Image 1 (cartoon, rainbow, N blue to C red):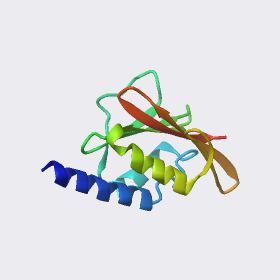
Image 2 (spheres, helix red, strand yellow):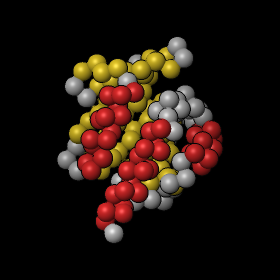
Image 3 (cartoon, rainbow, N blue to C red):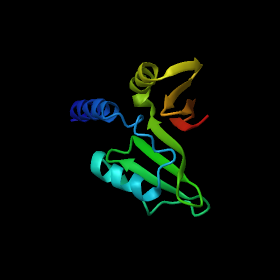
Image 4 (cartoon, rainbow, N blue to C red):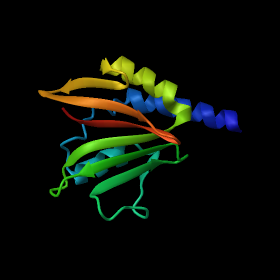
Length: 138
């Protein structure tokens, strides 16, 4: 059973990255549009409205097997200013490979890319229980 879960997860990761979610630039996107895009293209992620910190304006999405959480931090006008993806460490090799393939490496655990005319930074931060990938304007 565990092997089936891992295979399903690997298939999901291939789909997740091949769907070019990173190039779907959520930074600058309005809250309503993020919800539409996530509902249409990322069916394995569900919006979590029950466990939200009231001090921040953000959308929180979790995958069905609780290995990936995506936070879309929003301005007062509900425009996305930062995307933070939190992963279980079982995903680190796949994520590092994808980051290295898609973006220009600028340092240890940092990358950058250009979308239209705007440059963006991508940073991987290793924590004790999970690691995060943060995407924001440069």
